[in-house]
Length: 477
Ligand code: 4AD
Ligand code: MG
Image (cartoon, rainbow, N blue to C red; front, side, top):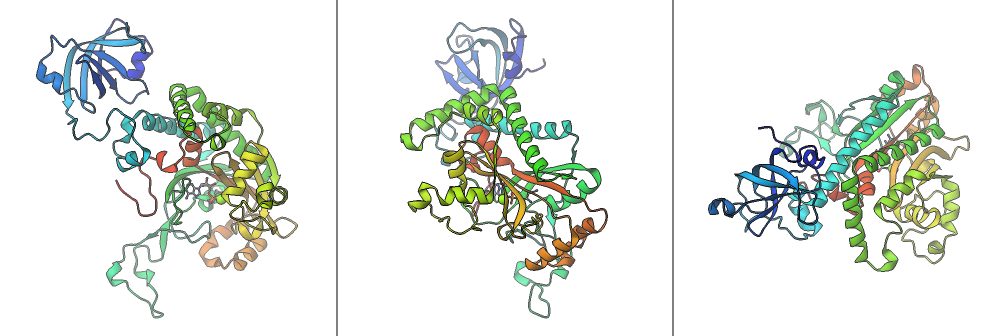
């Protein structure tokens, strides 16, 4: 007999029919009611066992976490809280679960505890909802770009260049750490390494995506990126997924339009397609907020905030305008910021970004034209000689969601910036070739996928929106 998913059964088309199901027991009450979940939807399906007709030893094996197979008839439920239930005619335990050992008990667990049990946490309502939303968001990403005529490019994971020039990379090497070959100067001799040179895990697919944009026109990458920055925050991972579109002939304004339109599209997609999961996460967040002091509570509920972002235009302003607002702000004058905003050119910290978004404008903000000194070498220099065509999209509760720029397409200007920043030309000769042969304005950005999932699901810690988080001192599973 063909098995159905619970999601299929909730569509109602199988009413009064014989059905077959497989899933895991969430709870078993009164030797009679099994709450079954198979992951296809947030909702459990109630399966009613006739205990008088069922072997006692079999009933004992229906424990939380056990995998079971059920056959029965789908009927309208008489009980409260569910529309349908299954009257069980055949029951089989596929995999037992010792109730005294199984870590995921039918009660509230802390997220810290569940992180330690990340291999089992997807069997909870919260994590299954988050991961279904994550899956829907990634589908929406591809859907958007396909609809807009972009090509999906797989940029390399192992790379010989540091795209961001920040030096926060994980080395990829097959050299024996106990017997590292040395060159005449006493440094590691990477010519003896697997690739014959020093290589790392990529921090961004941008530079390679640029080469493809200069041939395919509109491209995007969506893959894992790695950063060895030692930041133990609720918004940083050592391994995260980034979406990076890159478009030939685009200038910064078009890049901002693209970022805004893209974000709104994927958010609308999950609103339309993940109704149950978002409603559940909205309720979860509102319960969590109630435990906080009034002043720390979020101004909007989860769904309300998503809708707000979809319906309202993002504010756009230059770094210089933002700097003035921040310098004259109350927290700055009262020395409430950890990093004071006093001199033009300072890098903006998350506390400043969140002040702009959450207190001042109360909506997403796109900041552009940042000081050249605090941004990467590839960003296009403005005529003022001190700012570059950078853009960051800042989000409530998150801070920086997107970082991007119009790229420097002028060979001489790019060479000058590279030499000022101590980047060797021979390392990036292929990148410079793009400026030698048919150069053109182009622009793109990178969106941190986990930060998007955080915003959409209302999870406050980034470790809870990726199946197996990698952070300093932690690479379990
Ligand atoms: O601002 P970033 O460093 O920009 C780049 O890497 C560019 N090459 C992108 C481009 O123009 N194609 O990173 C982009 C985004 C950030 O805005 C943030 O959302 C996310 O990636 N991000 C992280 N997310 C999780 N953990 C980390 N450690 C992150 N670092 C950056
Ligand atoms: Mg950035």
